[in-house]
Length: 120
Image (cartoon, rainbow, N blue to C red; front, top):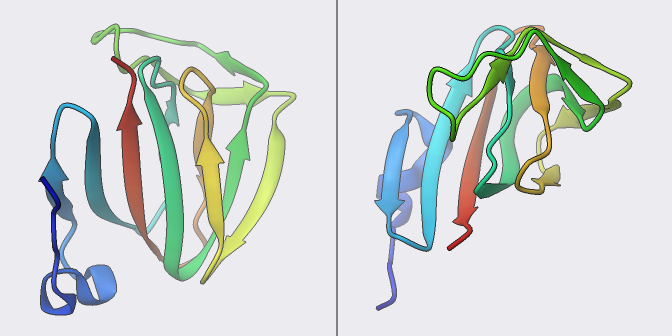
């Protein structure tokens, strides 16, 4: 079944949240005004599209101080040896399932859509 989201629903990603949640994929909008934690999603590939703002985003490398309160969403405090990306409006980055990633720096704010493709 196809899913349609009107521009009124998703315009500007003004409200963070989940627009679509299926067993195959999830479509979300997120806003950050500061750094996040290191994330690892063993069963989710993230396709991120930046719609406003800038951020320093790190992928790959080795996640440090990993805790796994939820084994499907381990978290860490830093990444050693990762690849640094300067994200800005219009950029798209794909983070394969199992790869550590981190919004390390958010100078002011960043808004983005993320499509999570779920492994079965």
